[in-house]
Amino acid sequence: MVEKIVNFLRNAWSTPDLRKKLIFTFIIITIYRLVAHVPLPGVNLSALRTLFEQSQFLGLLNMFSGGALANFSIIALGLNPYINASIIFQLAGMVIPKLEELQKEGEQGQRKINQWTRILSVPLAAVQSLSVYFILRQSHIIDSLTPLSLLAMIATLTAGSILAVWLGELLTEYGIGNGISILISVGIISGLPTQITQLLSTRTSEDTFNLIVFLVLAIVTIVAIVIVNEGRRQIPVQYARRVHGAKQGISQMTYLPLRVNQAGVIPIIFAVSLVLIPGTVANFLQGIDNAQVADIARAMANFFNQTSFTYMATYFVLVVAFTFFYTAVTFNPDRIAENLQQQGGFIPGVRPGKATSEYLNRLLTRITVPGALFLGVIAILPILVRMAFPTIGSIVTLGGTSLLILVSVTVETLRTMESMMVMRGYDKFIS
Image (cartoon, rainbow, N blue to C red; front, side, top):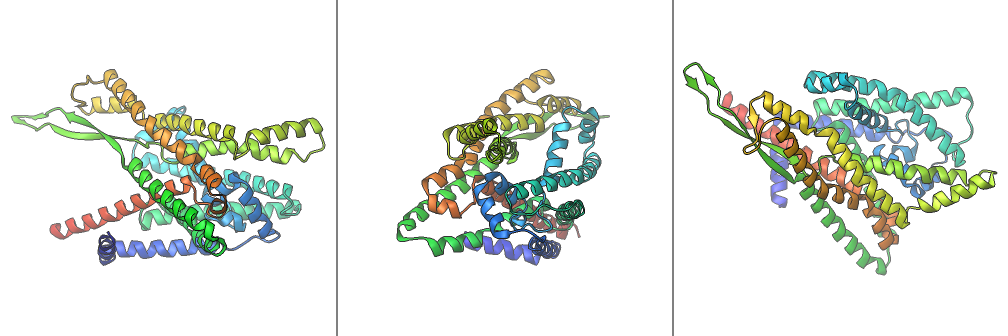
């Protein structure tokens, strides 16, 4: 296994085009990590990190910023505004006919949607900057700012977020794979050395067995993520023979892949945003002078306590529901059936048109059920690990969502590199 990895990396480095892309990727990642450690003034960083350890919602935002939010750097917002804008446009494509038409236009339409996504990221970044300021001021981590200082902070954080998006798009165009996903993964990985060092320095002899069990559980989780992400149902699609004059073409057979995890990590992001916001708001409302509101806030905080059964059950149900919802958004059986009929394709044994749409919808529902349940387990896995291994779970914050992102991005990047090397091999025969 190790020999295969070494040979793969050696072959990748020996390919000139791929070597240039790898070097460029390393340069962009270095710039991104350096900028992530340029802090804004006036913030108590130690108190800020303590707040992030206590709040899973802020921890999620910090994960997508690559640790920059915990450092309160100039790119503290990271790629969160761009991700939110992308999700908004994906959902808007269901209800806005113009966006739906652009999505059907292929690369040109996608380029236009990407441009609008960047534009929408600017006001979203400004709103998120203001929200972060109010949260930090309420927690007494940052002092009240004058209007001019507040405007400067919002402008700096907004510009930093757009800078992160620009670096990610440069990485997509001139580097390897999806630049946004790679930067998020690098941010997740960047916190591992510190966590491992802290874990090794504070562990006791009693924690050794727990650490071994924890590592075995992590390996099993990674293997399960790879199996589920790569799992798909191949639906055969046959195209009718075409006649050109006296010549008769040969019918072609292709496959329509239905993935088990069609929605990726998006349902977990949706669910965690909904399930954590009430608890976060309740924690801030407990300190107000109105006794009635404070009592309601305490009851809400207990209901949405991250170690309670009600919280885990709500979180699990939301992830499953959003998985079905987002799968329906990204994979439209009616549109697929219409496209197949227009191109002269059909599924053997299934009539074109409405029957094909119903067949695909029925298969998609059956395939999505195990994928949705798996994402639900992945979502609540960090909570269960923290309850089972309190010492390790309080230090190692790499949860199921982080592993899902890391594994998905790694597999996709390796697949991209492999395709580049295969194309290079074909170019030798052509030349």
